[in-house]
Length: 247
Image 1 (spheres, rainbow, N blue to C red):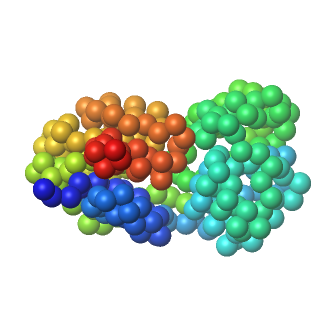
Image 2: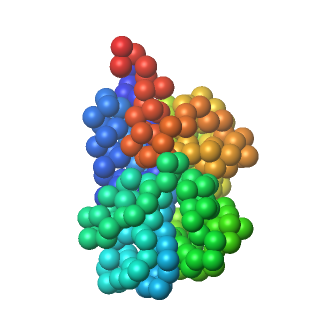
């Protein structure tokens, strides 16, 4: 019996290696296929806001590299992973929402931000749910694009494997990884076959927006972890695909 094969799409910047090691530790075999690459813009967040929101570990590292000083800002992290990354860079995190998402940030900050200046520092693919929600709550919102997310050259081996029926599970960590997976499949001439191949696999999405994106393309999603956390997602996908390993 062949090993359980799990397609994973993390950026090839340490996160992919960690994901592969985790999948291996769970007794499965990773199909490592990075669907995102980071292109820094060189921009830095404003230093005069009341609240400064960071939404990723990558963003935390880039603002530190830029020598960003939050000044009087209350630093807000979208979730514990981002909060830990900010802490590692020497920033004091004042708030992490209970729900690790743009919606969770709006809910956590909505009552605090009327009349305040809010800095949002993130990628070029950030959800408008965050900025629109904070503006609707009465904040003056400024957004800084710290980095762009692009599809790496050569991506798509997982699409070919899915088209051949050789993917047992797949873990999408953002809507953009879904988009890029399908773009890579189309480039290789196997888009419809890859979607069909995933119908026989256990597909996981890191959160509801990612699930909605996948399902809008006809990709059924079985697993969404309680928290929007990549490690939780991978563990849940492997457990669903091979429950006997945990009995």
